[in-house]
Image 1 (cartoon, rainbow, N blue to C red):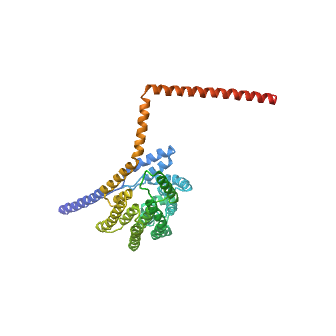
Image 2 (image 1 turned 30 degrees about the vertical axis):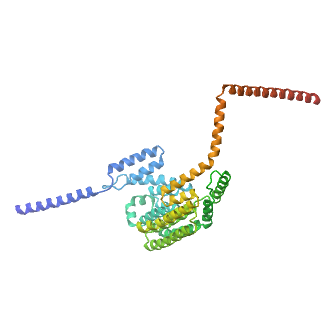
Length: 421
């Protein structure tokens, strides 16, 4: 009998030890906040609330509702006060059309239907923002899950029953293909060959002889007119639209859309590169733009660099042609595109020397005049004579002013007498 009691006791001890071990392990693995932390957040929230700092208080009340490993003793009062504060604050933000802040305010206050409404207004207001789409999709997916209902049951019990509207998520999920389509249309609109033609003409009309002031002034005026007619960089807008199309496809998580978009994007880039290199190579900046397009291709680095290298070779050849024609500034620009900086510097220096040679007679004349003036001012007698002449001129001017004053005064007296004043 004693032996069985001992065995039974041993079993009881083993069971108790196992239960304690499991409890301690669960507490050790718990990733929630401590009760002390949420109580401190609640205390801070009350202080901010009493001070009238309602937005800060709302954040602190939300923190006080954090999940805790033990029962959260302040979750319910924090949720109630958060709901009271959040509703008017969110409504005010919606009136100001600050929908992102309104969404977060409603969310912190447990007004999840209102949060969804504000979120949809926010994402609709920026239809070309894949990041906004990603956030909206994440929030609405979570709001529609059972986990959300379980994790936020305290807030839902305080504010009232909440069920996510599936139409919101459906609308958001339709955004990526529409965004891709819109981006490709924007790229097509930005691509303007008249703009490219006029830009190339401007480059070709740039005078090489910088001593020809009339030609320089005409070129400057033409540049200003071009800038007024084309205030935006249309090639950059084109590339940004292509990048946006890719960003929308990546954000969608739709493999079919990604593949279709990338194929269309690669074809569009190839078209732009071919047009720039074949029809508008008269401007070095447009060959540089062709390289920028080429580097956007989603291909191996070696393939992308090989194609870019062929464009640089074209720029080098055009630089040699321009130099042979004594168009040194144009040659220097082509060499820069080709990454031949030594040749670019040499052409630029040659252009400077040529200009200096043409300007040398004028420089010599100005130097001669400066020397003559310096010589004149270094002679004390000449300086004294110039001072005397200046003084006589000053006295003559003063005398003339006094005479004019007397004449004007006499005319005024005569006029008064005539009028009987």
